[in-house]
Image (cartoon, rainbow, N blue to C red; front, top):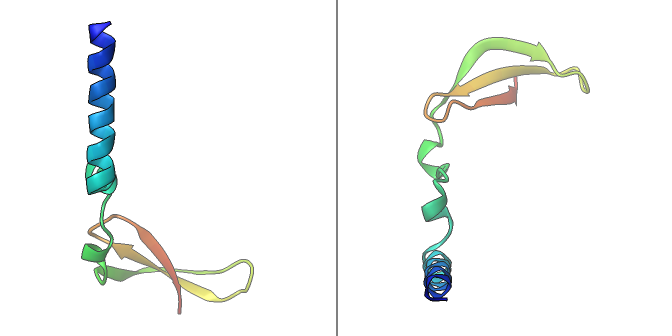
Length: 71
């Protein structure tokens, strides 16, 4: 009985801490605002299938993400 009470208290206290300080602080989520403006264009260009527009691939070194922007 005592072990169950301790487990319940730990879960409740953990939930209160997460609710007060925000889940993103504990989930390891990255913040995008620090990496804005670091994307650079690559040599990859392709035609968008739906519209036929030329699209260029941009690569963000900080996050490793690829973006597709019209030329």
